[in-house]
Each structure stands twice: as structure tokens, then as C-alpha cells.
Image 1 (spheres, rainbow over the protein chains, first blue to last red):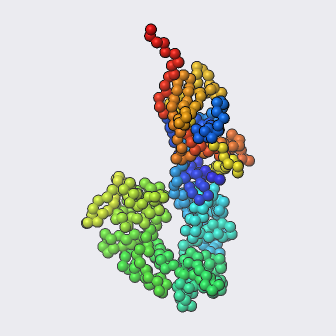
Image 2 (image 1 turned 180 degrees about the vertical axis):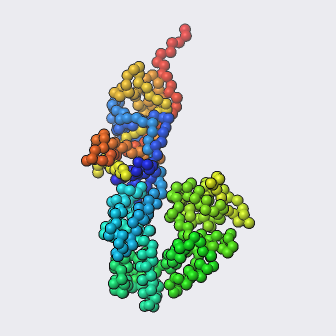
Amino acid sequence: SLVIRGEKDEQAVLCSRDKTYDMKIADTSNMLLFIPGCKTPEQLKADQESCNIIHSQIAGFSNNYWELRRCRPKLKKLRKLLMEDPYEGPDSQRDQTSTFSKYTTEDLLSLIQASEEEILHQLQVIDACKIEGYWRILEFDYEMKLLNHVTQLIDSESWSLSKVPLRTCLEELGSLEPTEMIEHILLSYGRKYIDDGEVYFEMREDKICRATAQMLLQNAVKFNLSEFQEVWQQSVPEGMTTRLDQLKGLALVDKSSRPETIFLLKVEELPEDNQERFNSLFSIREKWTEVDITPYIQDLCAEKQTVGTLLTKYARSSMQNGVKVYNSRRPIS
Amino acid sequence: MVQIVISSAGAGGLAQWVLVELQGEVEPRQSGALAGSLLGDLHYTHEGVPVLIVGHHILYGKVVQLEKPFAVLMKQGAREPSPAEPHTRYAVTALIKTKLLFKTRPKPIITNVPKKV
């Protein structure tokens, strides 16, 4: 079945099991009459008994109807809800005395304007995990703590980054952290596979480098770019290589400052609405190149939309030093 | 949040209705009400062209297969939400895949034209 979801101050959406649609009322100046059992010419031709009068009733009439248009599920609220009470680990005092709401899948279905599958998929994307039946996001410092346990173990055991054994991790680290958390961090930062009956993980270099960068960048407003790159490379596990393109949608490089700097800018903290997102981006920086702005608008693309279409609609382009740049269509206060 | 469930009326296939689309408005004769009144007669020519006779007007239309079919929803349950049934429910009662579109100007039917002698 289908479900219409929305709070009183939200626009209604209709959700199937795996899709979300905007609902609009469409008006027509024509009158629409609906007739149950009315036959079409084809149906009557097949029915050879002619010359009968069929009495039909008009069930009703209308001059408006509901129209559905497939839309992006409104998932920003999901992260916001889970960030109300991030999980800080079993020793955290906060969890025991917490009065914050915790959310089950059912709770989320009654709060988020999205289909069940879209919600479950997003929970996976943001690395949420179920703890005691409730969906939780890990507090970033705790997440890094868990990751460090794993990377240090990989280092001390001299394992290949692409063959990290689950069993040994649980054995060695189980005394430090709950085994479900060890497994969760491996699932979040690695790709699971089975070899010869044993479970292994191929660690995801890009994701680990990215998390390490976030850890470094969150402590200051901005960093000297070359200093940052040096510290960053030194901070990632042995054998991993850092690259600036790993930071798309997480951090932005300011090439106009001398020296060049880098600062944290997380796409998930920007507005969900298209116009508001562009306003926000243009108030951060007046002119953007396509390469720089793409990671910050990619998620706005509807089913068959491209970044180019969005830029044509919401921005104005010009040339600057031989490079095409985009700026706001309207003055930004 | 409100969650309004729309469910299918039953496993055994949905009724198929037809939409009749008219330009303008339909008014009841004199001071009568629309409900219970006769609208008119619907005929099809041999070529399958729908013909609607309303009062003393005749309209020619065409059969159109809807690109986006309609579903007819009927509200279920109590008029006002109660603690037992906090949310409205809708049931899909029928599907409409075809419409008879009448967009030409109605022509008056003149039954008796006296010839000038």
C-alpha cells in the first residue's frame, strides 16, 4: 500500500515501498465526470447485443485532482534526528541518563518523508547502526577511537590492508570495546568478503583518509594547505595515500588566499532545498568553478537531472582568468 | 506526523471506470439539483466516436487512453479522527485508464426547421 506522510507544516508526499513523490493539486477548467462501468466502443463491439439502453450513474465529478511527481526523499531530517543523541560508547555517562529520544525503524517511518527502503538505504549510507533496537549514529570522536584501534592492530600485526581478519580483530579488541562496535567499524570502513570460510575486510583507503582529514580539520577554522597535506599524510595508516579529491563534499580549498588554505565544509550540513542550497553556497564564496561546486550540488539532482541543468537554472556563468565560473543570479545579503 | 494509508480495495482486481471530460460547466435544468438528475445520452458511432446529447445540444468527442491513469480514492472511516482511529484512510476503489473528451462546442439540435414556402 501507499502512505501519505507529513507534519502539519510540511508539504505532503506519497510514499510507496521504495519511492517518494511530491503531491500537488492540479486544477482544470474542464469538468471531469467519473462513470463506473461505462463502456468504451471496443467493449461494446465485442458485446453483440445492441439496442439496449444501459443506465449508468455518474458517481461524481470534480475539477481538480491529485498529481504525483517523483521527488528526492527528504532525508536530511534523518541525520538531524540521529544526531540529537549520538552514541558515545558503552562507558558514556550520557547514554545511561539520556532523556533524548531514540528512534526505531517504526519511529523513523512516522517522522521522515521518505519510503521505507529509501530510509533504510540512507541509514546504511550514514553508517548508522542498531543498538538495542534503536538506530544510532556514532559520535565522531568515538568512531575515530574505534577506527584507531583497528588501524593500530593492522599495523602491529603487519596485515595487508586488503585482508583484515574479522575473527582476530574481535579477539584482540573485544576487551577494549563491544564486539558489535568493532564489527560495525569494520563494516563501515571496509568491504567484507569471505575467503576460505573466514571473514575478511578490504579496508577502504579513501574513506579512512577522508575521516582522518575531518578529524584534523574540525579543530580549526582553516588550515594552511601545504601544512595540512603534510600532517594528513603522516596521520593515515601506513600504505595509504592521501589525495585532495578524497575530500569532495567535506572540505574546500581556497586558492585565492596566500598561502592557500583549506577548511571544513560538509555538504550534509547545507540546506536541502535547491534555492536555499545555492544561496548558502554563494554566501560562502561569490564565484565557483564547476569542479568546486559539483560535490556540493550533486545530491540535488533529480532522477534525470545533471549538475549542468542545476547550474543553468540557479546560477549565472561568467569567465574569470580564462576559467568559467558561476555566481548567484540574485544579490546575496 | 500524519501517516495516511492508501490501500487497495481487494485482491480481486479493481473496477475500471471511465472519465468524461467536458469543457465548461454542467448546470441543472431550472432550479433542480445535479444529484439524481439525468445528464444526457451517450452514443458511439460505428467508428467509435462518442456522441453526447445533453438537453438539446449535441457534442462530439473522442476516446483518449490516459497517459497517466487515475486512481479513484474513497475516504474510509469516521469523518472526524478519534483516538481509536487517529488517521484517515483511503481505499482505492477504481482505476480510470480511458477518458471521453468533449472539447468541441456543443451544437444545438434543431428538430424542426420550417421551410419557407
